Length: 231
Image 1: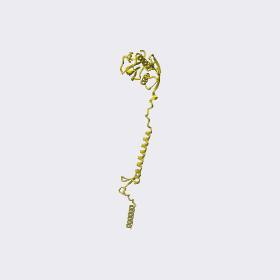
Image 2: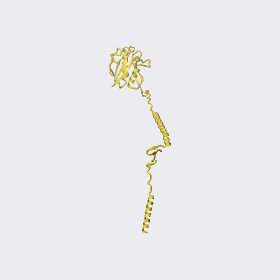
Image 3: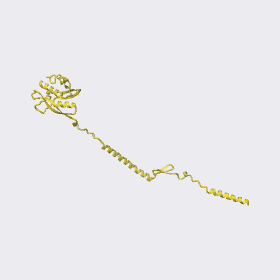
């Protein structure tokens, strides 16, 4: 009797053990040995085992958008250059006539008989001090009044004008046709002095002939170097 009980207990134990083994879960296979892991990237491509496989549809879309970006860049460049062109500043200089000054001065002539020195008025236009002196000398060489005869011929060339520290130097070339007699030479020097000494800044006046200080202008009257208001 006891032997049967032990046999029955042993069978129950064996069945319990067998049932326990049958219910144990089976371990999942290692996925790394299967078809491989897949990872979805942000640009529509799939990464399998470290290799990126691009979706043809997505790749085509990206290729199509690239020229569009280039075209936009070209358009922006054109617009930018166009803006620079519209911002160009004109370099045209204003007319110099606006900066010139007009002045009424006294000019001295003689009469047809060379008997006296006569004063007249002339208007000069100049842009600098040197131009002012050149215009004043030119006024001595011309007259619109037949009764006022210039003592300085138009044949006389004013070669240069220099002004420094109140000293004005005129260098002229005088041909023989411009020479006068003793009376005319004296009037010519007086006319020159009175015309230029009306400018307050001129303290002395030196007259050179072809760059040289001569004893006489026309051979009759002594020529001071320089001439001043007192001599």
